[in-house]
Each structure stands twice: as C-alpha cells, then as structure tokens.
Picture (tube, rainbow, N blue to C red):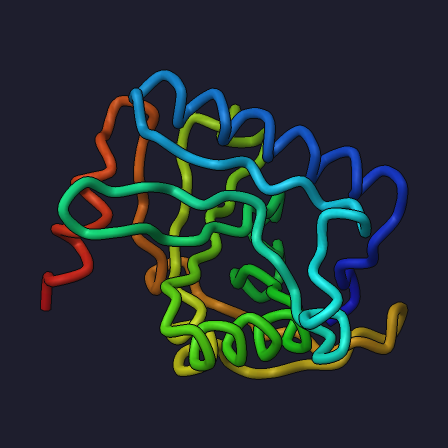
Amino acid sequence: MNDEFIITDESRQKGDEAELRFKNWLDNHNIPYFYIKQDKETFSSAFKKNSAKRPDFMILIPNFGFIFVDVKNRKLHPTYKNYPLDSEETKRYSSLQREFNAHIWYAISNEDYDFKTWLWIPISKVLESGRPKFNSSKSKEDFYAVPPEEFIQIADDDSLDRLFSKSFDS
C-alpha cells in the first residue's frame, strides 16, 4: 500500500478529536463509561512489563458488564477499500483480552462521517478477518487491512443495542 498510516502530530490530534466525539456520542446516548487517561502515571507497572496496551474507554452495560473500546480516526484506504489497523497493537489487545477475559473493541470514525457514524469491530474479528496483513513502507509497521463489511455500523441516532443485535446476526 502506498498511503500507509503513520503516527504524526496531526494523526495524534485526529485521534484526540475522534475520542472527544466518541465521548460526546456516549454522553448524548446516556451510556455510562470511564474515559481512561493515557498518561504513564496512571498505568500499572504490572502492565508495563508485558508491554500491554490500554483502550480509551470502558463502557458499562447494565446486566452484562463492560466492554473496552479503543477509538480510532481512520479513513477507508482509497485504493484497497480497507481500514488499516495496527497489527502489533491488535495482538497486544488480544493478549489483554485473553488474560483477563475482557471484551475489547475498536470504534472507528472520521471527519468524512462528521463523526456521526461509528464502525465497531471486536479485536478477535480483526485477527480473524483482517486481510491481508501488510507492512507499511513508511513506518515499517504491520497492519491488518479490514474490509468495511466486517464492521458493525452505528449511526448517530442508533443506540448501543444495535451493536449487540448485529453481533448475533448471521
């Protein structure tokens, strides 16, 4: 791929914007959550040893428990029509998920959607359906190319119920 994703100050700012807009979506839908601060002082030393990664939000779901969500500002690759997701980060989330029986999802949006549509996918599905895994010629990092049809789409006026109902669709 020619236009691979590289973390720059601009992409960091876009990520912060996506997190803020996701937080607003949660607040507008009265969904309880914890926004997880990402600075080093709030990260357990036990996790640092394992190079663990922490998601951005913990969403609390009545009568179920919680899910962790890592929010991403990603655009559909114009040529390949896939969303790039960092393979190392995904593997680290997968390890965290397995070790603690946690449910971890990505939620993706961008300014093209005006952050009014969120594309959700569980970490395990990225590992199963991300195709092909590719190496960025710029950052030298591996990414999973995940097709849009693998995501569950939730619009601004949808509730979180859609996430669960679509999770059980065939």
